Length: 181
Image (cartoon, rainbow, N blue to C red; front, side, top):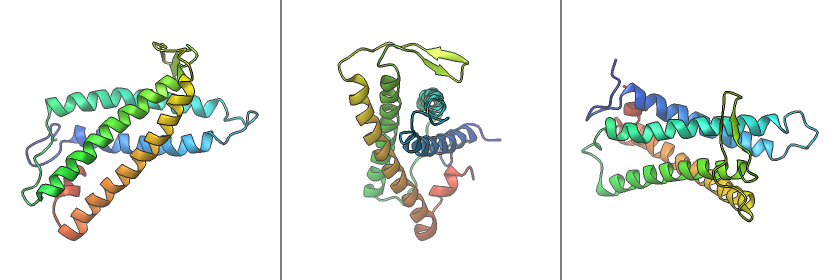
């Protein structure tokens, strides 16, 4: 079993993290859109945000590991067939995804801790509020959270379309490398 990345392909750890984070982010996006429309007396009014926050904290931990993993096990080199424009576009998309994901996660934390309350992660442990009480903290962080979430969905959508283009039109191994093959 190939755990680490090689110069030619992604290892199983990178593949697992990639798809786990992608599924979790899209799931949280859908949950976030759904839960903001809930009424106070809805049974999910308090439960949905708790699930959303808990998964968000876990994704933050996975993303910190993912960032460290990029140094421990560098990603494969770009394919020789990639043009300069493709290389720059791929690099830019990955930078935007990393910065955007960390921005979403940090802004979510700032929303959740604006009143000085810790974030409970499924009741297993709590993340303390380290920065709270700033004027309009929840509102500003909430606006950033929403716009960055939409940005991540859009950029990741183009990222997926580019992978499909490479697979079906260019017929190269871009997509199959991230599928663990």
